[in-house]
Amino acid sequence: MGLQTYMKNGVPFIVMVIVESGEVGMITLGKAAMNNGMTNLVYVVYYNSLGTLLLFPFFIFHLFRSNRPPLTLTLLLRFFLLGLIGICFLQIFAYAGINYSSPTLATAMGNLIPGFTFLLAVTLRMENLDIRRLSSQAKVLGTIIAISGAFVITLYKGRLIQMFSSVSNVPHIQLMSPQSNWILGGIFLAITCICSSMWNILQTATVKAYPDEQTIVFFFCFFGTIQSAIFSLIVERNPEAWVLRPDISMIAIVFAAVFGSVFRTTVFTWCLRMKGPVYVSMFKPLGMVIAVILGTIFLGDALYLGSIIGGITIAVGFYMVMWGQAKEKYTAVDDFCVLESSTARNPLLQK
Image 1 (cartoon, rainbow, N blue to C red):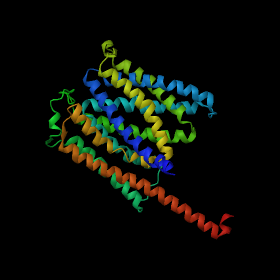
Image 2 (cartoon, rainbow, N blue to C red):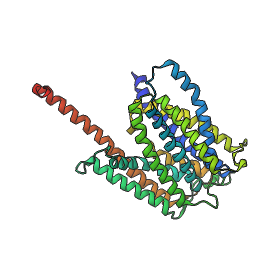
Image 3 (cartoon, one colour):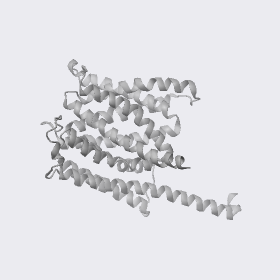
Image 4 (cartoon, helix red, strand yellow):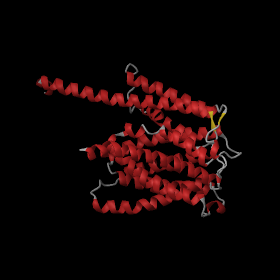
């Protein structure tokens, strides 16, 4: 009984902390690689190419051992769109934004995704908005607060906060290069959040139509790699930019491929099945704390008062949106139980 409780509660908590730490580490390594001369376009193409190669054997093994639903042209088109939005647009904009700003801003802006997803779902009439309900009020107010925090963290820096001064003499790669443009980075990261929200909605619809996660993940990476490679080869025509060197760039590519394409996807799928989407999303603000620590200690990232105020504001808005979503689910369950009880007491309602 104790082992079952640990597997149900302890293991998901531990692996989600590992995932958030690894995700920030992946972003930080990517930033270091770009500061070392690699462009965001080359980085995205190389790490997704390696990730697709790593996923290919698992996909082939999955084909032979499972009775998956048949693939149709409509499904392949959905996989194509998932790759276009989730890799070609999302990741290229994301690492462009990180290149102009910092991993701390990237992880903070990532908490806007639930709010943007809610706005898109309401706009597309995929979700009903009843402003009289407390859950809807929480989601609307939380979205407004989170977006306000994004404006603060992007437009206001404030005074410099000195942290970990005792390790200032440790050699590191300077994170904020002279050509950095914080506001432009924030705009790119906001576009990334919108793309991520669109991808979440399309992915949810795709999984419902084709409940085979391994096939979806492989084709998503496969199509996205091809699309980003074509786009990057058109934009980045300097042959020297595509030369891989045995330095931090290669480490970043291998880590992103192994962690981002294989481990993270597997853990997310498992935790979603074990604990649900609300539990998984609750760990997102943890990434801001980890990003501040890693960026300050290892990469010399500057921490400003505006980042702290904006980050806290975004986290408050994020948790309000998540609370509203959880409240709606519990309300739906309660309404269903009441309906079942009423039906049991009044058999005529079943006719």
